[in-house]
Length: 385
Image (tube, rainbow, N blue to C red; front, side, top):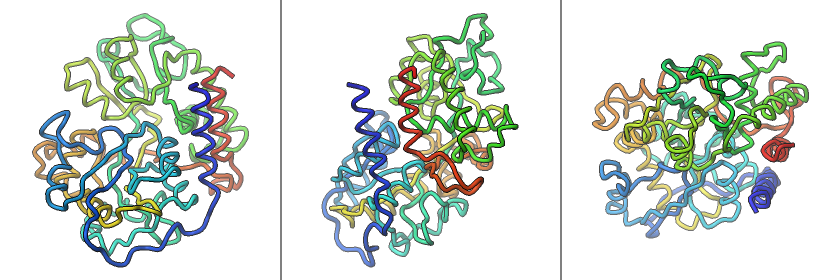
């Protein structure tokens, strides 16, 4: 069943490239709210205080606008693309490996930034980012960004691991025990980029310029590395909460992860920390994008404006361990504190290679392995092929 589900998701992902035209006409003016807004979001991105009363950026929005917020969580970018292909949602918090697929597939519409008063407060490094800007048109509002960190158990590693090799190469850990069965890898084709990022640093003769732009030889090297990793991993994770349970109860001590898991585990008193190793890291810069056929466009625009308020940006960054897209959120937020942005990586922007959708025509070398190959081949890697 799991393989069948993966195949269906992969097919939906590939089909999302079918069209290349503009998704829909851009809205020119706003009207009254429609009473609700339906959002596809990463876990932890839309909080209403149910987990912790201090983290709630939904309740006040609903009171002020009359737009009830309904959330469907998705654990991978491919799930997000599949859900947006199905329809029935107004917004999605899409990472860079999904956003351009949604534009190309005509699943999202261009955003009129003149209808979003807070647009000018967005970090200049993100305002025209290529993962949401096509031919000068914006297809969403930046939400949050951050690195894919190396999470580790501090009782096993007294010092932070210096390299991603702890999850890619067989070895004994500092406690004298093998890493076989004690590490994890991400359950998504974009993990190929993590392997390529590792090879960029450790095998420079391959000539990799971008982990998302791989020729056949570079791609083969990345797959070979992943096939070796297959012998080490205890689980390919995509559910953040299952990964946290594995670190607490199943003997996992090192894995690529998100700051979200690190923060929650640390708040529970678990011996957990994270680092960005010497190779740097892949990462995500997420954009709130609006479905081409959104049933509640006015509430959707209201939410996008609300999402850019410094209070929401700061609270979310404190909760998720991410970096706000609005720099003003870095000061004066009680939950984030004035040191929170630096702690979460505000100054690491240049060290992060943000998720992008691999395409056949690429900038660094002309011809590259396209994403549909990543999808099918990574399924094979997980399956032991």
